[in-house]
Length: 374
Ligand SMILES: *Cc1c(COP(=O)(O)O)cnc(C)c1O
Image (cartoon, rainbow, N blue to C red; front, side, top):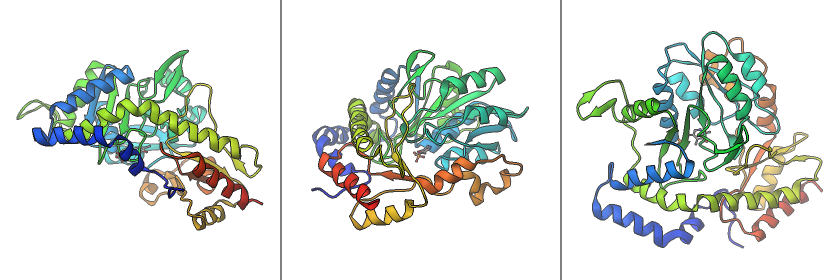
């Protein structure tokens, strides 16, 4: 049996090597490393795939979130509501722009924002909500969009872990990231659509926001050396764009492979009383960026050590919810109870998840987990 990896980029590269090498060589021979033709090509392909009017490529997912918030024209001290159970980037950019992050708890089953808690956290200063589609599961966009509309708030979707996921929004099937005002994603190598370095993008159907974001990623400029707003330098490399064009064609297959592995895990683990398998909602087609179990009765860390001895990697996403992070202490006065996230940080365990898992590997992993509890 091949060594089990948390993420197996090597096996995937081997499978797609001829096409990927060819695409990279073309860029190198053209030496159009910055804003080469492959960037625009990928942009258009992603617009078609997502059925969204505008894709704005940028340097990484964190920049995508920052650029999105900059485009909304928020003012210092404006409040942005998001999840406390997410990767740091979501909240970091809010604080960096001198906005106030307001952290809200997540549902124990879906790991995504609880709409009722979001509504409770709204004040006169609230301007935006950032739902995070964590682990490939869509947040409750039907309810969150209704709340946003009622209170006239902007919605920026953090789609870094859920690119390609379909979501039933008001009976319409849409791609996650295209429902709110802006969607943001990351092409970090281990994401469901990953490049060979850093990359990211914003999506929107709003022409004005698109124009604003295109300016912001380009030093606040539309015409070279004329600058209308304060911007940043955030570009997707031509090489990465060429790689992403090849991988985008495979994305539905990648996500299918992930779901197949998740089905196997579900089947083997669903009946154990100490294990909670990840929920799947009716609205959201889960794309399993992570396959994350909850391990009850304080046994998570012992199980993780046991698996390690059997050469089975696993990860804890995330060991410390963001409301407990030292960096965010100044923002946390008067914070409401975020008890679910505190519990989740002690219970969650993510199993190996990628496009190349074999049944033999999956069986080895699930047998080991069940053996631990015997
Ligand atoms: C990966 C990730 C990001 C940031 O993406 P980078 O490309 O690493 O900057 C943001 N939000 C979430 C939820 C992520 O998983």
